[in-house]
Amino acid sequence: MEKDVERILLSEEQIKSKVAEIGAGISRDYAGEEPMFVGILKGCFIFMADLMRTVEVNCSMDFMAVSSYQGTNSTGAVKIIKDLSGIIEHKHIILVEDILDSGVTLNYIKNYLSVRNPASIRIATLLDKPARRKADIVADYSCFEVPDEFVVGYGLDYNEKYRNLPYIGVLSPEVYGGK
Image 1: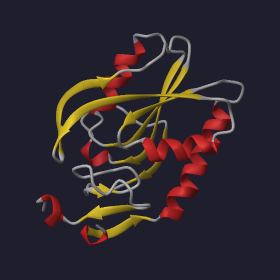
Image 2: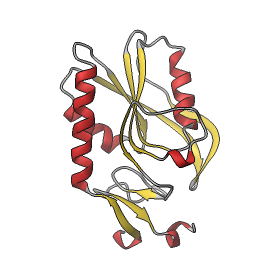
Image 3: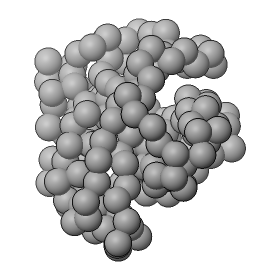
């Protein structure tokens, strides 16, 4: 598995430190509030769990599952596979995503949820890859900006593999047929 990783981009220690920093910012911003973390499955689960453990305000969570990728590319068409379980009206929502890439999916989800009248919607992402942005959307909380390379680990996958790596690594192009 690790032989497939060309190089480590972000170490386990770097990730832990930055996640704690983002959690402290969320705690400050939501002092006296009870935000709801909405994780976009599957990639968010490790980041969201670690992030929520650093937040020092009462909060709740829910998950959505969406599909917009085929192989290594976004199709541009977003399909809701699992919607939220509860009502979000008048709640402060923090969408949690592993990577903000093209932005198409997050933009769609943000618009999709906004009609449910939440108090606010913000975005927290582990990785931001602005070089691939197609939608006009930015993260309110972002841990790291990454170059336009195929990254795996810490919840991010390629064909459902590599999610369990404790770091973010650049996948070798030989593995996914890239350049």
